[in-house]
Image 1 (spheres, one colour):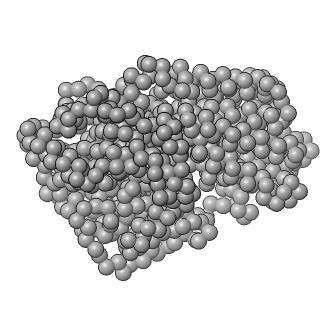
Image 2 (cartoon, rainbow, N blue to C red):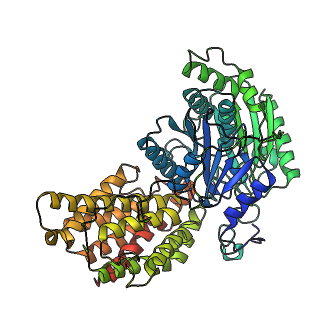
Image 3 (cartoon, rainbow, N blue to C red):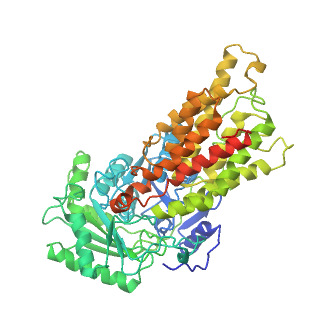
Length: 634
């Protein structure tokens, strides 16, 4: 693992990377305020195809924006999903009168943020919008992935190419969706690496952050530095490794991994993905080894693609992706019997061969991009969902005033954020054991953004967060700040919970007012009312995630806190904090079932090498700080 970077401490690295892509490809343009890359030649009379995910996978997805593939790319921070606001901005930036397809990698954060944006688009009147989930990884067994499902690897770029070409050809919304889903169902991928990637700005390899010992190879890893499902010691010769990788994809009799369906004589496409740190020479040799191994199995690929498609920064690894073109064509005929009854292998290959104006797909054809985007997001990044005061997306009732003393409200928020910020080193260390190590910095970023909102204008400035004592407005504003500043799955969890909490507090106040209670009767929020609101917010969060108690996620600590608050009627905050803390630490003994930890090899779990879940520990840090700010001792 090399920990040397030209941009080792560049907070704007993602935006600068986007600007670099746009400079190299004049068919694209950057919207800096939302950190998006869009195709200049997008047409309203074509289905819009949008994809995205964490940065660090370049050229995915920005390298595939342009005529013939993606209408827009939505990058998050390194290894962290983009926000729902970014996705909404992309939908607005490349509008379509036909429909919008979101190509989404099946990682929890991407699923949550793209799913939220999709629901919000439907609520705003956009009916023809759908997500095509990509689940091509065969490494994780059916039983281990029962709740989280299969991950996405480089197959997401194959889906993007075929869907984008279908959209460019003028196919309708439902046709494009069906072709995308059929493509995903016909894919199988597996990846191997000799070491993990190093994230710019993180601690060096000398401190043990994810470096693999010499002579070891991991097989069955994801895109975010997650440990492989298999550890091969010593690292096998290339021919043995490629054979094992192909066996994992092609073994139809494996009850746990027999995902890829095929028969002798099926037309197939091979893609070898350089994960970022493999030399071009070795990647080409990996292709040769793969073609030879397929030939031994009687398979001659109809197309062979080689290069970097979905990387893991500088990881010295490679992935193999197989697309069963015969099965894809048959699936399209089944899904679209009326319009595509004759859809054939040649039709699929034509979509793969279709011209495009992107940097990332091989054999790039430069098109003269004379078109223009019909609707652009405003330079200030507004996507039409803010209130008149620009502080959040919830409509707040103006009569709610000083539900909590301002000094108490601000002290509680400040202490919670400082506690979360100070927990960053431990959160990063624990998260690095399981994958990309982004949890600590993600939480710190969100905490610092809320602290900045508190400090804007000072304690006496009415525009400062919480200065008016309005708890509804304060919680809604924190939710908006967190959505913008705190990426990844945990950011989505926090944002949804806080938005639901604000909505419940508002609903309770409106109900009291409707019942004829005077303003003074609803002016102060009671502990009991807070406990009820927390319980309702948790129920709302359950609608967006399958995580529950015992799943080894942030919700273990969150559920413990809320249940203890409800049990005491909000009277024992200190006891609830201690209950949450115990639940967070207890996650180290739980078998992971959700999130990236669910993909960790079973050997690691059985060996007891798991730290506490960093998300659960982040929740514990927040509630501990909250209690401290309220003057409550444990």
